[in-house]
Length: 213
Image 1: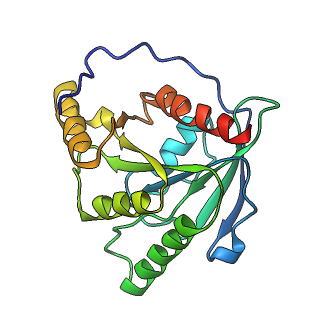
Image 2: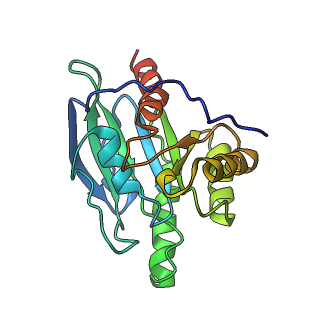
Image 3: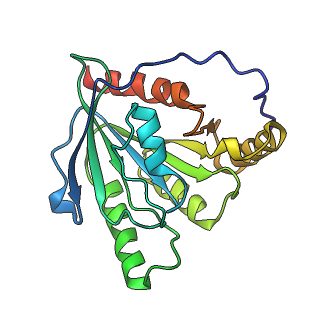
């Protein structure tokens, strides 16, 4: 599969979300809040840049905590987001990172069960963003997650984070590899430059609006 990322369309400079607030954390299914009109679940390895993406995507400086040590997100965190005043609110859901080898095995297993409990729960309309450090390539964890999302009927989009770390040529090759193994067209994202922010807003916005109708 060949991808042409050399001449992308000019991105729209979307304003920050009108509202973006932390709502609650959950360590078990019974602590999940009642669903809103739509949910966007973020999955990825512990050091893939989920917190930085949330902050840049929603137009906030420190809504999600960015830690120097991978694996600090041990709960499911729910953020209530309203993109435009008067529009239905949605949840952006930050799931615990997987693949953090330094954590005890029983703790990693509990995180995995928590993520699977969330994905299997009846939460209404939602989609998932599968975040991957563009420099890492596809590993067994990503393939397993794609299989799980597919089996549960959850729409997903692959997001290649930290694209500023590669040259344009190497990024193009990495995106093509992700697309061939995981399907779809990955969003190339950089929390430093904001690259990919408009694509994420456009990917989620129409779906959340349709779900609320």
